[in-house]
Figure 1 (cartoon, rainbow, N blue to C red):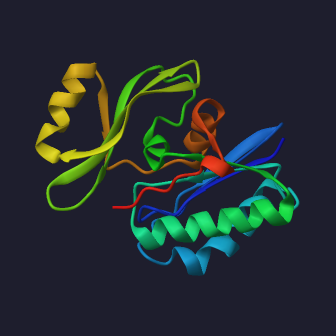
Figure 2 (figure 1 turned 45 degrees about the horizontal axis):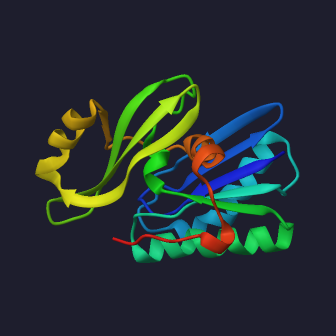
Length: 186
């Protein structure tokens, strides 16, 4: 099975590609140029992998993120899923901040800037590559981040480059199928 992951809700264009004999990920920092670069970057990813431009499953980061950013990725993923007749799964963008190494077991608190001294954060347990959501993504004052990490004995993952491969791993455990796909905006 070939799986494509994409997320456009952060300043990074987060892409991941997984197939039976390998995986590949890219996350160029684009700020606001996602819509302009997304199709070409997806084509380049498939080309680099030596695969035809087609996936069996698409994983989309559903936010939290900027309204426009979340919508760019979601609309592109929905269109590809329809054209390719691929399964579409959604996972929180926060899962893209989890460690890329599937064997990095532990409790993690990924966080994204939500502006005005707030963050979006959630707590996740990673065990042998499986991801479990311990607390749902929520908006909280940035000053409360350390207390939440202490409460759950979690490592904070903030200001790290997102990973499309982490999105793919999270989707295996947490993925929401298309009819229940819910997007989250800043």
